[in-house]
Image (tube, rainbow, N blue to C red; front, side):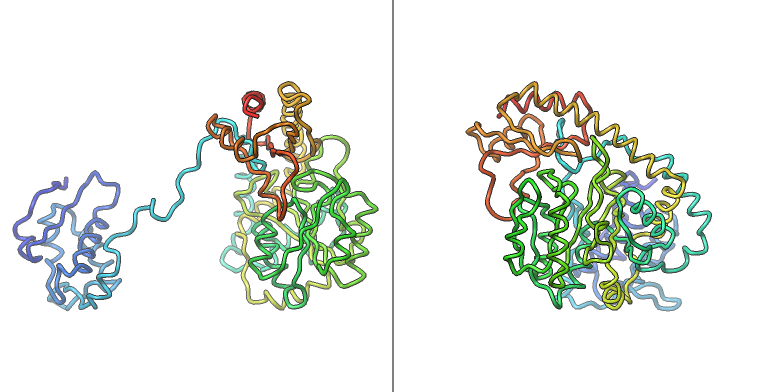
Length: 481
């Protein structure tokens, strides 16, 4: 047992009157405590250059710890250059530039100095990106992980294909053709770590000959940020019942258009086939590109999912983007995109020296998950779960808001949009009052590139709550509006 706060006379004398204090109840290992204290005294100048440290044996006796504890601290200090060893003489303090050393932190910063605080705990969380907390298929994923580990152990000592695991790309290709009408080859598919990486790749491929991107307004804020960070200009396109304003797009200087045609984010409208064909014609007539973000197309609660825009012209200038985040897990950071053949050569030239951005183990696990049919069964299961929550939300809004609110975007996805034409309160006021009642609301205004809605508008996600939480949250919210 290490005695806390007890001075050891011999040790204090050997180290210039400075003692070391170790605490066995501290979760930091004893050798690390000793390392930290010696390092601090060296950096502060309290231990002079070339001063001899006590031997490992003497230090261990004086501190009532094992020799391994002291040796571990000395070895780490020696490896980092704070002390040096002399054969048959022991350990000595290294000569350091004290002006520089004085500027160095004497101890590692507290975690609170560089980590964000814990997220606020809301009883009713209407954030649109929240998933059902019980939805991840943990046991199935574990089995697929182990199977992938067993089948592919030899590949784990190698770098994978930077474009992504071939087996996973083949599984995605088959799934997209069956369920989304996407026509492509596995060779066109790139496995990415989320939409932001996909868009970053696209922006780098196209930046030499393109500089203006048309973005939906209101629309998802992430594409806006990615393209702005890559020095593109943003051209906002108003959204109508049929999607983007095509006449304004044609009149602009934009050569890239980012769209969510199957379920516009956030308004939920579907781009009709006539507008899709007109958009494709716009791209083909001037060597322009369409980025189709098909982020949650599987979650349509009435009728069949809307086929992809890419399937209307598979050989056209359409970059298709999909993800596993909206139905499986955003924590996996696992997504994919389909590049047109015209961009494959530029992609490979630009990224030929890159390594894969997604863990091979995660890719092989996902491939196994898909091969066994778990992915499509998971989609069907989650569609049923979210449909129940969606219907509860709609009934609750009808009960508590009635004719005071206009509902749009229902019938698909994980959120709806609530317009309050008669309220005198602003969005910010409602969000603040809701926060005081433990209700979390994501600002609808975040989706606007320019301008604001004419009436106060709220975005209501329902994926992360139970049915009873949805009902209670809407009841409280109606009293605040």
